[in-house]
Image 1 (cartoon, protein in one colour):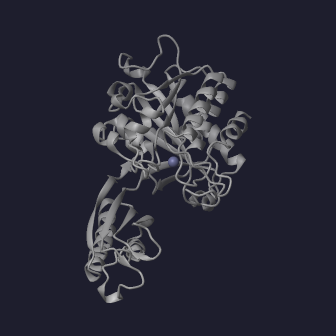
Image 2: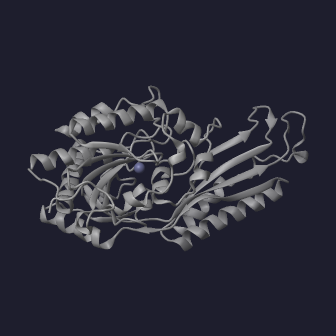
Image 3: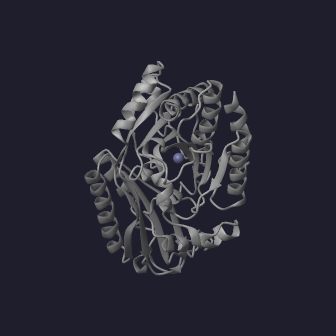
Amino acid sequence: MSFATLWESLLPIGRDGLSGGYRRFSWTPEDAACRAWFTQAAAERDLRVRTDNNGNLWAWWDRPGLVPGPGLPGGSKAVVTGSHLDSVPDGGAFDGPLGVVSAFAAVDLLRERGCLPVRPLGIAAFSEEEGARFGIACLGSRLLAGVIDPGAARALADAAGVTLAEAMAAAGHDPDGIGPDDGLLAAIGAYVELHVEQGRALADLGAAVAIGEQIWPHGRWRLDFTGRPDHAGTATLADRRDPMLPFAVLAARQAAAVHGARATVGKVTAEPGAVNAVSARVSAWLDARGPDERTLQAVVGEVLAAAREAAAGHGVELAAGPESVTPAVMFDPGLRERLASSLAAQGIQAPVLPTGAGHDAGVLAARVPTAMLFVRNPTGVSHSPAEHAEPADCAAGVRALATVLEDLACR
Ligand SMILES: [Zn+2]
């Protein structure tokens, strides 16, 4: 099966020998290797590859008269599937790549079935979906959809102080061209993203594939605690203004538990970061998600209130604010129904599930009818090397995606 060949050819890229996790960050040599892999997979299938202004990759199965563009009549709008190839630090193999590999494998399956698209069919790999290098999740699709200012994006800096503009330029991509591409979006009639499940609902339901219902509202807040740097041996406890003390991790856990939501502090930096000194500044990032906006605001409000109180108690200053907030996204009901009926017609049982994870599909949903398919992850773990999908479930995912694409693009 073409899935296994594609999967194994991508697997070594960016894998850390020690952790077994992936470090595929945008505009790095690993990212370039992922792009080369995509280009080759597309070339092997005679798909036309193009990198858009924002660094997102597109592979088009089109032909003269059926090329996606603003001039096409409405009925010929393109159908696009795909996901992303970048990872979180030491992420798993499936989050993102499963959607891209399944897309190529689904094209192979459509050709085996003798299906010929009557509208352009595209495979997309969006840049910097995880926000692992520049801090903003779904950066490539946000730029495409015009929901982030290009100038502000160019100035985003990674941990080493390299800006997005510098990183893009170093990788041979012109950063001056980034920004919304309304023509491209207008040419797309539907976007269907297949993704590994990031939870373990499907394992309990006994199904291999699910249809996405909605994405919980979610966001990232940065909390900067500023104290007074001092000596770890000579400064008395009473005299310290130690910014390490109030960073409110426990409050996040408690607020999430009370509200049936999720709150995580997964990244903390301390400056200057000496073992034997009281820190000058501690920055912590709160990731919060909830089933609705009101719950999300309640969780974040409680965490920030606890952080303020704790900071005041330790004589530490706190500056806190959102870095990115994404409202709830309900996937297009009509497209969802169409997925459900085309899968049911093939005897594929697919329950409907919400997700707490953000996706490019969530960003694009504001502009394009969008749907998602999830593939069972027996561990339920994601953003970790323990993330997994069984080969039989990956195959079921490819079949489900091909079925949906056949219905949307070939009829
Ligand atoms: Zn993902």
